[in-house]
Length: 198
Image (cartoon, rainbow, N blue to C red; front, side, top):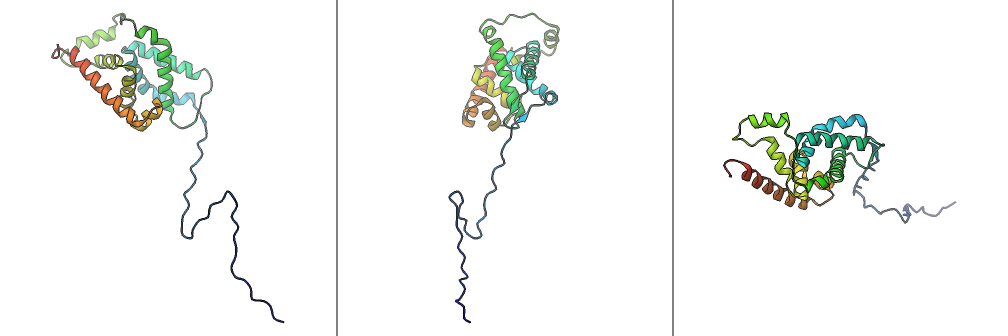
C-alpha cells in the first residue's frame, strides 16, 4: 500500500489582532498597567518637610506656611484619594498650590502686613550681612506664580525637571525656562534687599 508523500510544511494562521514576528526577533514586554492606589494617611508624614519648604516659599512666612500645610492635609484627608501613579509628592504639591490659590489669592494682592513674631526676631538678631532663609522665602513668594512654582518644585522640593513638569502639568522645556527666569527674579530681589545691593 502506497501512501502519498506527507506535506511537512505547516501553515500558521494569524488572527486580525496578532502581529507576525520574524524568527529571532524579540518582542518588547508590554508596559505594566499602572493601577490606581490609595494615598495612605500614614505616608503623608514623609512629605511634611518638602511641603513646608514649598508652603514657606508660597507664603513668605513660616507661620503662614505651617497653617497652609495643615490646611492642605485636612483637605487631602477629608476623603480617600486614589492616585493614578506613584507620584505622591507631585499630587501633594498640586493640592498645596490649590489650597494656597483658594485661600490666599485675595490676600496675595494686598500689601503684606503681618504681626512680628519671636521667630522673626531671632532671625533679625543673627548675622545681618548674610541673607536669611526668611528673605529667600519672601523673595521666592514675590515671584510671578509660574516662576515661583518652578523654583519651588525643583529647588525646594528636589523634583527632577520631568517630575516638576508632570506635577505642574506642563512640558519639561517650559520648566527649564520658568526655573531660569524664576532664579533670576529671586536673585534680583535678594540683591535689592541686601545692604550691599542698597
